[in-house]
Image (cartoon, rainbow, N blue to C red; front, side):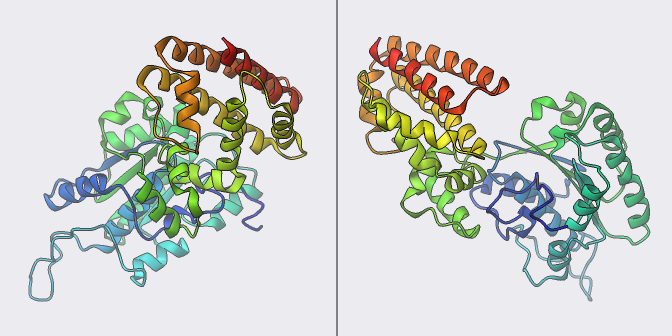
Length: 382
């Protein structure tokens, strides 16, 4: 089975897998926090890596895994007993044996838990797919499989690293099984839990892990991260950083689906209000109504919600940094004060409810988009 057939929940389409990403960008504080603990001899057995989607959480987990499996432990001196140098970076050379094994999914010291099967390579994913072991959550069997891994790898010595991506996807039984492991941590084993929504985890799991929180990337870091991923943002780097809330994963999705152009159209249509540029609105609705355009419809609705949130915020706090040309002037005109900001917030709430209902009952996409535009027009005229 090819990679095109089996889903990849831990990979953004159009970007390298986090294990293939050589360098973490824009998250120096989290990297330093881990290295400070490591160098001080306070390496915790459980680490909770949190932050918005797409900012590098999985990349950090794989970087830590490479570092731990490739770096001699404190007691492993050189030939004459000299201590190894204190590391100041998680970077491991690409030609290091551990780096090569991890890239190939064959390092015996690493165990990966995902909702479609545990293991370290895409062959494990393909096997899970063929055996029908895909699910919407991580099951207890995948967590229990850690016991076998730890028992077998303990005989070989060295560290062991476990990545759970994403820990939010564990069902109740799996979460309880992992909690027992955190309560009685295996020797020389580090568990790395990637979490998009840590509030969904058991409080007892959170309390037994040390948190590394990652933040959104700024425009410069976004451009570097996209370049490393082999993605050219062109002249849209600033817009992508603003519209993606600093998430590289979301920026790649925006590039794949033409999100910046779509947001520009939303701004342009609203700029024609309180009168409405109907041909332009109809053209936007047609984009979402084409066959197989479900992803574009979801993106359009998401960008509309983001635009309305920016309008509401602009009324309360002043226009945010401009994502596309003309947006700041538009917000200043249609959301000049807190009262108008509240009106846009109420508009966003109403449109969001309509959109969820429309998607639930499979309303015609073009009708859903036009209904959204007309509701925005009413607010603009208010």
